[in-house]
Image 1 (cartoon, rainbow, N blue to C red):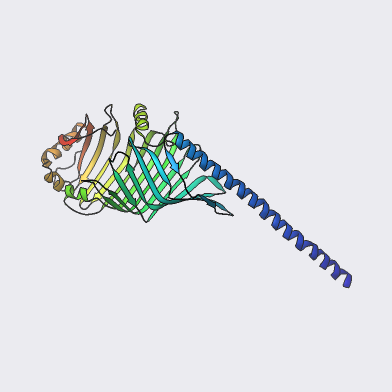
Image 2: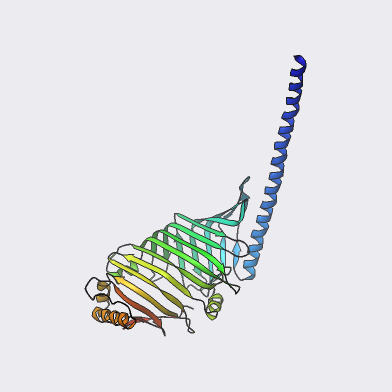
Length: 349
């Protein structure tokens, strides 16, 4: 009996070191692969910074740290800064910090948590913007060649403009998601979905006569969208010349008793002003119309005639019914059905 037992002991004594050596080997190989991935992530990040610099957008990432071993990559930047063009103005900005996460199993998808506040200001003093939030996360897929989709989620968002007559804004939650579909050009058509909940905009309260919070949603398609470039004046002009459109599938806004819904197509004209038409349905619009001296009976009559001429069933013209009529952006002016509103549409850039 002693001989078989000795053989078992010998086999066990050989098996344990082999198992330990195998585990050590796997850990060493995995550590090497993770280190290689971390080096590549750092190099890709440097390449992106250089690419942005060549395009006129200078980013800095002081005190960069790469971690996340063993199953992910985390790149942390403390107090990153930005210099570049925003809406035709050279601007400077900074944020408290960012943390980017990449899974080793999905390296083309990145999630970024931003730590606020963010301070953004025009070098010529045209604006000075402070943005704070409780949570702000950005996710993007399809990197680095062509983004295929992305999402931005924010909670307890607050925006403050440090200039006279500025409109402060705050929101309980906001979300933007987009999915790009490449087309025959170098750009893409991007389907988007935007939601904003519990939005407070004091400036708008003066128009509506109440301080109810806003619940809004918007979805549609942005055609000929260059998702790789920042929205500079040059890019906006290229988008306009490519016949880019904002195709609104559904817009919904609720504030107190007012409920507005719309769909249509918007673009930019040669003078860089908004042009196009939205077909709207407005409920609870009467108090707003009275506040601005809009003859509601004429508006209702215009909606009735538009429905009849368009071969549609016209709504019964009774108080409380939703107004269904077009909002037309044309020639720098705004029309609500048959009524020309005293609103001038300034060039966007």
